[in-house]
Image (tube, rainbow, N blue to C red; front, side, top):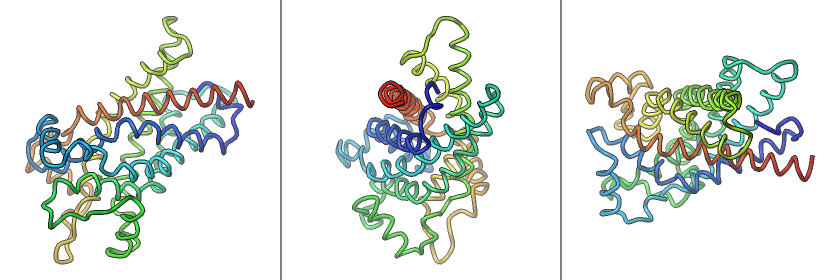
Amino acid sequence: MSSEKTVPNSIKFLFGGTAGMAATCFVQPLDLIKNRMQLSGTKTTTISVISSIVKNEGLLAFYSGLSAGLLRQGTYTTARLGIYTWLYELASKDSQPNFFMKALIGSTAGCIGAFVGTPAEVALIRMTADGRLPIAERRNYKNAFNALVRIAKEEGFLALWRGTIPTMGRAMVVNAAQLASYSQSKEILLNTGYFEEGISLHFVSSMISGLVTTAASMPVDIAKTRIQNMKIVDGKPEFKGAIDVIVQVCRNEGLFSLWKGFFPYYARLGPHTVLTFIFLEQMFGLYKTYKA
């Protein structure tokens, strides 16, 4: 990124979380649609999910779980982008990191960030999924903090980290793909001579990054989503782990169901990536201009 080298680490973490939270305000409806599609267990389409939500829950339902989405960004994105920019700066002292080093830095940052953000992730998945359940089965969390307190009280404190392994696995894939492909795309586009540092460069780099990330991460994401939303029946969980989810999805719904919700996922991840990096780059630019 353009200005990290003059920005203190504390500001990097602050800007990372703020950029993610600002982007989430725009893409929360797409996140909800993606989660509903991944939890459907049957063949469904983006249009049918949208129609069902509008008909049965109303337009405001698209922002169900927004508090959890913001909390997730405030924890997960603050950690991952702050750690990434810090490690990237360290790796850039002697020479520009290559793609594989960028991917390693990205996956490390994502893994740590995912562990920090898992409780908010669990709350988000459940809050966005609640509307598809029969009224008697809904959890009816009031907000993200109410969800965290109730999960800890009703299911035990460690339930807040349910699905941590697939969440960390997904984050490693997402961040290795997203952060590395963003940096690499930016570098390649600048070398073409058709782009210069600015919003257009950040936009195109982000859209390329979002496409690469979506294709790479969806199978792990669907495993994470279903594990975090599952209920324990008679002391037995629905799934034994991420591999069990993937095997069951392939067996019961078909191989390509691992990419169920691809378009809302990309429609969400693409703009979220674009907005996050644009907000981030602009904040770094302003900080460098006025403070550094």
